Length: 115
Length: 116
Image (cartoon, rainbow over all chains, first blue to last red; front, side):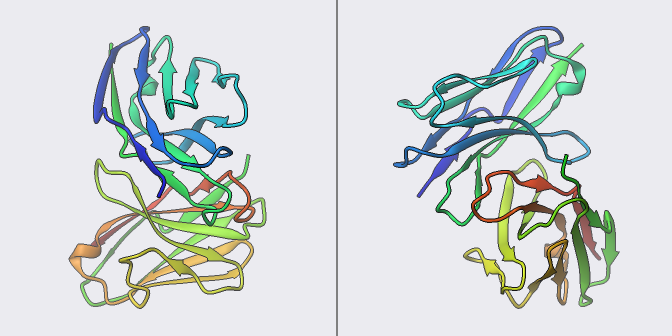
């Protein structure tokens, strides 16, 4: 069964600095999608970034980028120039075509940003 | 972008009563909808997957008679918590997608249920 692991329950970063959130996953498949979602205090889930496993190039969205290491089954999220509004729970998630459309979520990492 | 709404955003009900939560896709046809439950500081736990016009598929351990899911149209799915008890108090989130083969899920804002 596919699993997603986020080993950092909490992380903290100083405003304007860079932080990296870790995520590993377990799968025997070769074609899948990986996501990072942000859940701020409002609890609305927001898609931060998406990575297709067949693409070697790491996805980037403005200040957010990923380090996708397919062989190592690692998918970390780097947030550059951290802002107070980045404070939230971050969830890593995995999607595979033949698993009934389900997203498999990690446990989450709570990120705090210090002014 | 695709918008999903949930109603109500908050609900308080008495133990033993039933409560219905609606999930609507506002600008697209959602063939598939998902219902999640989330406890504070924890991850989303998938409860069930519903496809329009079909019976919902429940995850292991989820009581289908307690959590009734209906997906009668391409824009509306409902979750009814029957005979609610305090332990059913939680945050319920729905998401919608164009279908099982589509990786993008669009999330609703969630519903906080409190059972007294």
